[in-house]
Image (cartoon, rainbow, N blue to C red):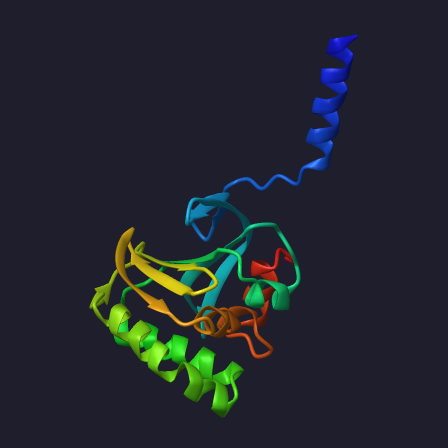
Length: 190
């Protein structure tokens, strides 16, 4: 009888769990999980950022629980992670300019002024990358206080400002996302 209960419990757990397996997107393997501040995160979605006809990076978004609610992800104070695996060589300033453009498109002027100093700190850390190559990984580990920036698993620095992570997430998930199809992919809708 114990075996039947165990089997039933195992089956119900198995059927009730949403499993996400590592995906390969445009030749880039995207892990199914990540860890930020000792907390396990799951792949919410991933997709390719293209510009004109060029693939720029594969973006992968990790959250505590999968959701298709962009606003909930943006404003969640739980740990989140955004990984950008570059698909072409880029200098740091080109990447910074593209990220700033996405931030500015999704924030009001007062909001931009509020996070201005934090955004400048973020840019300084990103500038230390210099020239990035195909396959390099930019990782943003976000929490309620701000975010930590990593490049190829090396910490570049941390910026503490509670509105910086939401501002950066709006690049991909805001009302004017950098690419609509990428927003859909990050939300697990495509």
